[in-house]
Length: 376
Length: 235
Ligand code: SF4
Ligand code: SF4
Image (cartoon, rainbow over all chains, first blue to last red; front, side):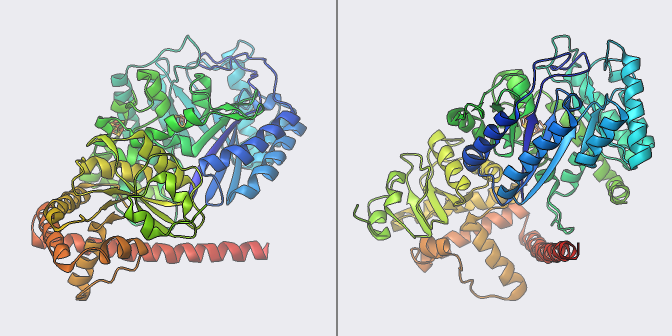
């Protein structure tokens, strides 16, 4: 089974003003229902056939912000039904999910759960106060915590959370990982993206490598929850050379981004103005436009250029002992650092630090115990 | 348009711009890429595209785009390496694993090329032993490995190739004595890469285990599919 992700941004508007986000305070309107239908028709009829997306594929549609809670409930339902009816029959399986800041009323949050079930993710930062609404970090935290209590109390569900890792959060990151383990929720640690706000403060790659190494250790001592990238990279490395006895797709197949070289075949992003890019990160950075689905244009030439990444990985990656697991890392990061979609990601030292930890776990025999706890 | 037969086309070193003159032929090989084919001929399941590169570790854009086009159309691509092609074998295995194509060290046309071909096969055998994520077919090395597994553990005296490409490209074209020379080169290379004959035997055993694991995985998958059909029917 192959996997494909379609990122859909219905609007860029947001009700929060997080310091590192490209959508902070944005109010630029959303895509119309008619435009949405045109765009999906174009994707179904002209783009998916070019990308080879069909009956072998599991399609994941991810609705991203802007903020989905700013869109009327009735319209969200309509958008998801249109997407389901138009794209569902083309593929073997379809899952629709949403990334929301959950800054909204209890009723809206529960409605989101009614629609997307457990396919809801949210953003998280318990310590630095960089996530704000109405100019206030404490207000943001209060509303988010209330929403999380609502979901947990009324639906028994705790959404996975994404932490943007920048220099401000560095000193708290190990605490965040411990909190996730004791709180029993999944966490994704995502190094900050330069295409966002100009005020972003990055960690150096060495600092990031050291930090990830420490966080991996914390996770590996108690791997009850999924902490990314540690869980996926561990699974991939440990499964190297093994037959997939559980009959599940390999971690590489299912966990893809940002450890894939073939994003052009696995991912597409649709913006509220119809713009097409490989993924939301590329869209944020206004890189390599693939055309416009409302205007019914697709830039074959650019797509082919990006599709060549699988053939043109940097020599360091081709000779790397972890290529099978890392796959060269994110193309967008490579472009960001070197202006070259075939270059090695800037985050390489961080991934190598994590792989070194995993090798130590394997050598010391701890890997078997980690696997055992993960399987529980 | 006058439709040509496969043999007529092979006689004149087929070009990719000519393959649409064919229809209902499942396997085409020895194709030189001179243009990107966006719509492969009906019924085509496998295509052998001749290597084209700017350097031993630099596959040409034309060949890349062709591999992408055929793969997207559901046609299995085999990149064919001629005996005299200068390539970086490890590099080719890495990109084949990434991009999902197969590789073939194709035999020479004349006896004088047998030694060069055998060396090409031996280098591929060596690269295959070191490759961590290549799971496609590497002709003729993968077939030879399968034969060795059968020979070691099942006592097979000869393996009969079942796929059309191997039959057409190798079995029907390569005289037995050429094949024996290539095999002895591959055997030495595999044994050296494994660290000796005993280690090679251990390696062959692990292949056999993986084959069993794969068969088990398929059975489990069938079981899972059956269970989910059953629960859908019940719902
Ligand atoms: S470019 Fe990076 S962020 Fe975008 S799909 Fe590829 S790996 Fe993911
Ligand atoms: S760890 Fe670094 S060198 Fe290795 S594949 Fe990943 S990005 Fe490339």
